Structure formats: structure tokens, C-alpha cells
Length: 199
Image (cartoon, rainbow, N blue to C red):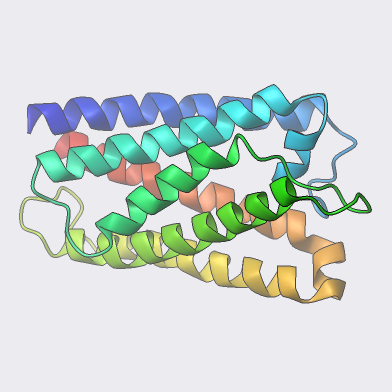
């Protein structure tokens, strides 16, 4: 379990770095609305380096958790979806979004596909894996609140999809819902990393 604990610690470091990058993006680019605009809009502007760093760090954090779970023989239901999330986060750094009003491009379409993959895969991973882990005797968090943290990620991901598909909602609050998704996802990843350290 020592290796799993090290990987859990490495994941927490990567998550902290990702959060730092997100805070920098919001501080350095106030023209991007936290209520209306997608986080990926930062990646198509002058602050793209911070955006690329944060998605890469979140992806690396998820990979560390996935490897840690496997090394501790805790890679149960939904763990493969955690890896899908991780890979989609790392890859999306290479494909900036098409900004609203700009011409649609192949790169932008790939970005949207990778974003949808990330939202869907972490919803499945968090909601299924956290329940499975909570039922595992060796897992540190076997209280009911841990599975609920995974369910929150899934519920917000569904809300995010609805907000994206309904034009009136997209223009009014997509950015806010996406930032709630980021917060829930990072919290669940952090809790899972801590669980690795403690288990």
C-alpha cells in the first residue's frame, strides 16, 4: 500500500497545481465570464498556457489515482472510466475550443468531443467507483458521504449537458454550471487521493 499512498500524494500535488492554474486564469482573464463562458474559452486566448497546464495536471492526478487503485487492488467498478477521463483531459490541452462566433474547425470539434468524453467518463467513474470503494473493507472512507460525493459529480455532469443542449440556458449560465462541475470533480478526486493515502 506504500506505493498507492505515494501516488495518492502525487495526485494531491497535481490537483493543487491544477487549482492554482484555474485561479490564475480567473484572475488574469476577467473578460471571460465565470457565469456564461466555458472554462475552455481561456484556452483559446492569450492565457492558453495556464489552461493547458490545468487540464494536464487534472489528467495526471487522475492517472496517479488510477495507478494507485490498481496497485492497491482497489480498481473496481468504474475504474476504467477514470482512466478515460484522465486521457481525455491530457489530450484536450492540444485542441483549443472554437470561440463563440468563430468559424467551426476540426480542432474545435475534437475539443468538444474530448470535453463530452471527460464530463461523461468522470460522472460514471465517480458515481460507480465511489460506491464500490465504500463497500470495500480496506478502503478508508466507508461512510455514506463518500459515495454521495461521487453522485454529486454525476448530477452536475447531467446538469451541464442540459445547460449545453438548451440554448437559452447555455447563454445564461453554462459557465457557472461547468465551474460547479470542476469543483465537484476536483473534490472527489482529492477525497479519492486521500483515501489512497489512508487505506
